[in-house]
Length: 269
Image 1 (cartoon, rainbow, N blue to C red):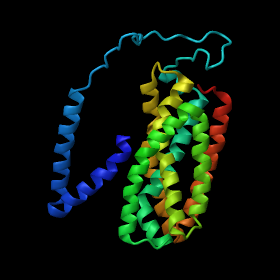
Image 2 (tube, rainbow, N blue to C red):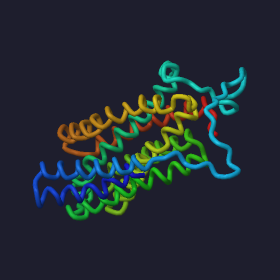
Image 3 (spheres, helix red, strand yellow):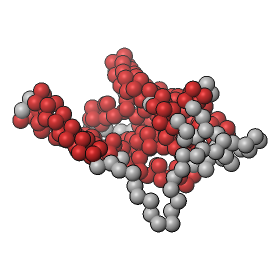
Image 4 (tube, rainbow, N blue to C red):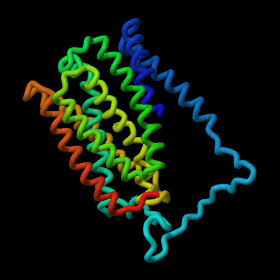
């Protein structure tokens, strides 16, 4: 949630500091502020007290019995074991595609809004602010939904919604529809982050969840470069955002098929 809402707060603050001081002073000021916030917050971290009547969490991890389905007694896998399975690379792939498309759109949403639907620079800036809220809200909303319908079904919803949204986005010239489609895409982008740790635990267990999650997050680092580069390159070559948006829809269709295969192979809680 903090990851999504941070851009809504930090963006205007950084812009204000640049205007009244300089770029170097902004980085220095924000660095000091971040240090104070992070250090003071981490100093307050404590394990929660065990309430009366609630059993304490144990470190005992049951191994699955032979012949039992995954949901009966989940297998607890190490990182080395996980990266030898096709499910790991399937998760990595769908995470990479979800972020590539989402972060690519984030990088150009303001100029795209002005070019495609004629929004003013002020209106486009306001949309960027709303996106910060949607990004954070999507993490809360979609993770709650995933607890109800399961993670694999949630990712199927992510990709199905985004395929439709990106296709419509490439053709629409209506401001309201454009904003609605962007909001849908960014909510799925944020939800993809919040649901991934639980999705990993559904498949590989929690024995080395952090380590496996860290390996999956390498997709984020690569996608952060690939997404904006693809969109910018295609825009320069074709002179239009339409083909890139349709390319993203095609990539999401691959992710959709992959998520269907994952859904058939695992049992969600």
